[in-house]
Image 1 (cartoon, one colour):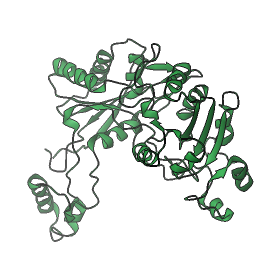
Image 2 (image 1 turned 90 degrees about the vertical axis):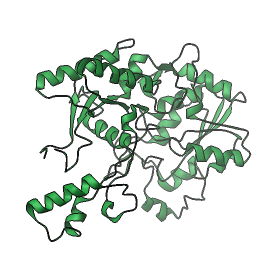
Image 3 (image 1 turned 180 degrees about the vertical axis):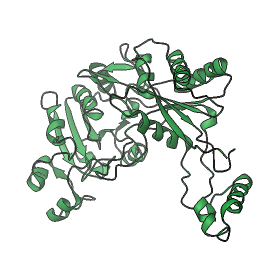
Length: 393
């Protein structure tokens, strides 16, 4: 029996720039780390590459003036309702600045008591004390301030209502608080949904409610504007702040990239290494309630060996039930036999409590936690033994 299970290793790499050969950088960094730290690569190992370095080497950037030009094209009337953005200085604020620059009037609708990924504007206790029904009540900024005063994010200390208002172009942002997307139609029939994960449903609701123009962040900069970067699949979803006037978009053509990296590993090592590009992990902070996933997907590109979901037995369930009278080597042998003989466990009691999420979401979350988002300098993560189990020899 192998005595070590899943391992995740952060691999340090050079700081990349536009035009760098990232396929070469990734493969050389992993192979050099293996030689220096005396470990070996094996078939089925997974190499994750953070989306940020992929986008950087692609030069997938846009200015907010280029974004504003695309907004003007899509909303020639000059008036837009922007629905349900997340509260983020790094993510949405820079986009809001560009969108505001592209219109004459914006009705910015903030969901409350929290945004789509759990950032809190006000607490449920405050909502209840004020006698507000967030499912039906629509509040103006003045009404919101009357009930709740100045509200600051518990982690960042930012009053996002004040901050987002400050990003207006010639004071052209009016903030409204609501949770029903139809509420915006009282102000304008031209709508941009800024949601990440609920965007398809919101677009459907608005179209059924006879909104005249309906787009999402995934519809902006899907094509290059005046030489800008673009993303045909996700638009500006997954983008974040690069400078005060530019955004870095989510990388494009990731499937092409991961297959090239896999082929290069095969050529250099003889091993079949699975490769993925990863962004935000899919997990929720238990203290503040923020759901980490501010990207449209955990992985925008991965090799075919990462398709699927786990099909796992719950060992402690078997040990406490079917094999409760066994101990030591007999118990070990029975568990290993069960693993080797397992079939589709969907709905089976012996799989209860396992995690049948997609491999790319599970491994991508592991990579995100391993590499961090600050100064670790490990934009590449090597995950080994992930597909091993208790019976692996």
